[in-house]
Image (cartoon, helix red, strand yellow):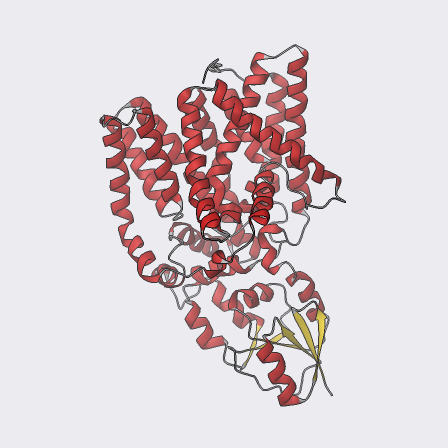
Length: 516
């Protein structure tokens, strides 16, 4: 590394200051606009079950019995209620999904109790939490680059980042994880700079918050440790000892929940499904692009042709960071990105799987990219103010911000998006069912899919839910009988038992029983 360019305390020029304030306002707007419009998908229903205090087994035992139930009966298992308290929420999570620590879910339960249980209200806690990322990334840029200019540009980048906006509108812990990544990183750098006990105590506190937010925070802590070791030239010193003490203290506090993870861990078999390396690479690049530009990949879509330009910008930003940033900044960002990427990529490449294709798991990696891009633009804008090269970079940053704004505006109007692909058809399915006068929905699908659909249906809709291979009895009194995501067992069983015709209505996810 050479030719380091110092950015110390350079403030944004006036035009950029107004642009950043405008983008920040837009970022806040995009996080809250149409908050309840998109499909409340499978993962979000798991959040609702958790904050209600019920377990998955209780849901199946009480609802999937073949008896008629209504929409309100399903919603009962998705909201806080008098039957279950806060400890039931924690217990439910420890049994069903211990890989998701409880901090966010406890916060969400209190939030829903205060502000209501609509989809928008349930999601709004994540949207509010996401706003804390703005001061956190500013602080991190000050610690990394000693540059308010880089900090302001980084704020604008995440404000209109399609990736961050999408997860700010999801009733899961991912926006809180983003905040803890930034907070713990800034706290570590401050502790190293100040060399005080209170600094390391603050860092230890962020370690606890991170671990109790998301299990993959362990990757961030490993990256922090690698950074500390590299900057200390792999020699045991006070900083390394302080880091080990802080992480150990946080880890000890996390042990009770870690035991739940070990004893009740989920199989997550979906992540082991093998896909080709070519498909992996395509998804990796598309996910990376979504940090700045989120478009449907199609050669008929002209915006698709901007993807190579975004990838070139990312590549050049990382090269520029290596050549011109302070050594500590480059080492910190490269370890944050490298540990996350390798931990997810290598198992997929060696054994097969798709852990690395899940964009939210790569959040630390994307944070590193945004920090590198912020440093690039901050440097170019500061050192090339009036010449032609400066004008080129000013146009480039405006175009990059425009990509984010356009992507967020498009996403804000959609009923589904790539992060909710699993239940993207539910909006159309619900419209078909709601058109019937007195519909019955029969299903043996997984609980999350049915709960997702329940948020879109009118109260007139009735359900008969069973567990495969059970076949429910169909009685008279319904204007229309639908099968939602039925198994082959259910389709064949109903056809044999009732001698009726099963007519596909919407793809393979909705069928109608036509009386013979």
